[in-house]
Amino acid sequence: MTETQAKPQDPRLVLTVKEAAGLLGIGVNSAYEAIARGELPHIRIGRSIRVPRAALDRFLAGKELVAPDNEAQISLLRT
Image (cartoon, rainbow, N blue to C red; front, side, top):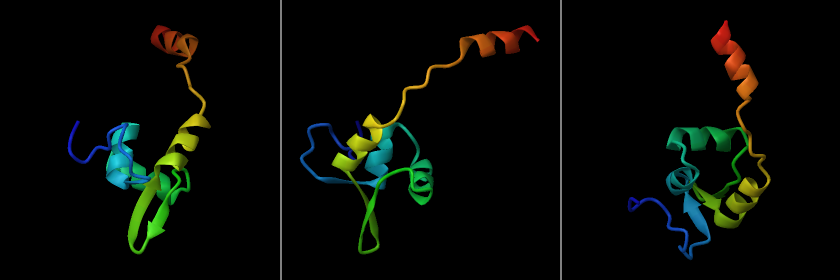
C-alpha cells in the first residue's frame, strides 16, 4: 500500500480523491470524472475536493454487484 492510499483503519473522516480512487481500484482521472458526473459523493473545502469516508461506504453499499453474462460471452466466441 502506498503512502497516498488510505488504510482501512485510518481515522480520518474525509479522503483525497487520489486516496478514494486507490480504495476503489480506479484511476484518479476516473474518480474526477465520476465526481463531475455526480456519481461519486464529494464535498468541497475551499478549492479542495474531498470524499467523505461515510458517503463512500454508503455509495458502495448501494451499488449492485454485476456478474458477467457468460451466455453472451460464449455466443460471441462462437460467431
